[in-house]
Every structure is written in structure tokens, then in C-alpha cells.
Image (cartoon, rainbow, N blue to C red; front, side, top):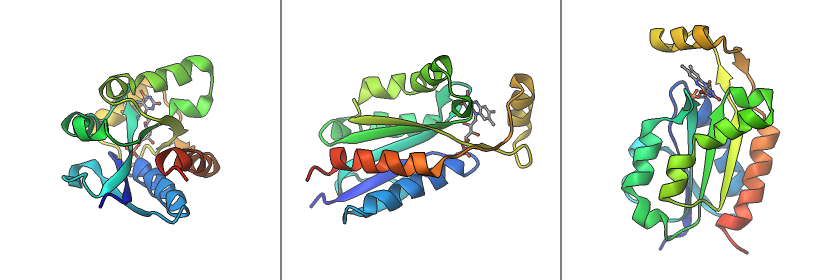
Length: 168
Ligand SMILES: Cc1cc2nc3c(=O)[nH]c(=O)nc-3n(C[C@H](O)[C@H](O)[C@H](O)COP(=O)(O)O)c2cc1C
């Protein structure tokens, strides 16, 4: 029986995985079993009554693996409640144009499967540990480094989305 919730995510440096875990913890408070897994490790959606899917934003886009996951499972996903979240650094600065760009990172996946809710959260960017290519991009766009994640905002979103995923 489909009685679980899946929180599936892509990540390059781990910060989105931690956001996904926080969402999972909050959803568990509804008394529902929740699995938090990287998109690449999920094959079968049949155990799930609802799915939350997230990705960090890289140069304006979701990571390909989250998009591919939705493409691959789109037929199934259209039959259950689905929510999307994006994690991006520019979001930390606020501003309508910045938020619009972060939302645009979800345009493609929203066309495939219409979500019941979307969330956009500030992420974390540490210059140490980045690949050479990523370090170069970061220098070019002069991105601010730091951990801008707002756990209260993540938990509040998960609480709000819970009733849409698991109607009382
Ligand atoms: C090369 C590179 C490009 C990025 N491009 C964007 C971007 O276009 N918009 C944005 O909001 N954040 C951008 N970010 C910030 C990441 O989305 C942020 O660091 C996120 O928390 C990374 O998630 P991860 O640790 O799960 O990989 C970029 C980061 C890097 C390293």
C-alpha cells in the first residue's frame, strides 16, 4: 500500500541533502513514514502516497538528476501530490527579481508535473572543497560564501506543505 512519503533530492556539496533531511523530520511529525533519499537511489515510487523533490540551483537551473527523475516518473507523479523545493544562494539576498530567477529554475519540472506547492530556500556555499570549474564560476559571479540556510523557514514550509501532501 502507498502509505509513505518520499523526499528525494539532488546535491553536489551536501547542503540540499541536509535541507531534505530537515523537511523529512518535519513531515514525520504528522505520524507518516518518510524516506529521504538521493534521486539516483530511487527506482520504485509505488510505496509512496506523496513525493517532495528538491535540487540546488546551479547557474540558474536544477541539477539534471532531479529533472531526469521527474521526467522518468512523470506519469506516476501526476497521480499523487508532489511538492518541489529549490536551494540557491542568491535567494539569501531576497528581492523580487532574484526570487523570480530562483522560481524559473523550476519552470521545466513544473511543466512536466504540476506541484501542490513550491519552496525556495537559501543554501550554503563554501569556497573550500569546490571543484575547479565551480570555483571559477563563483569567482566570475562574485558570489558571497557562507551558510545562509534558514532552518525555521524550511521547517515552516514543511509544516505548511504537510497538509497538502497528507490531507487530514
Ligand atoms: C558553480 C555554482 C553556481 C551556482 N549558481 C547558482 C545560481 O544560479 N543561483 C543560485 O541561487 N545559487 C547558485 N549557486 C549556489 C548553490 O545553489 C548553493 O551553494 C547550494 O546550497 C548548493 O547546494 P548543494 O550543497 O546541495 O550542492 C551556485 C553555486 C555554485 C558552486
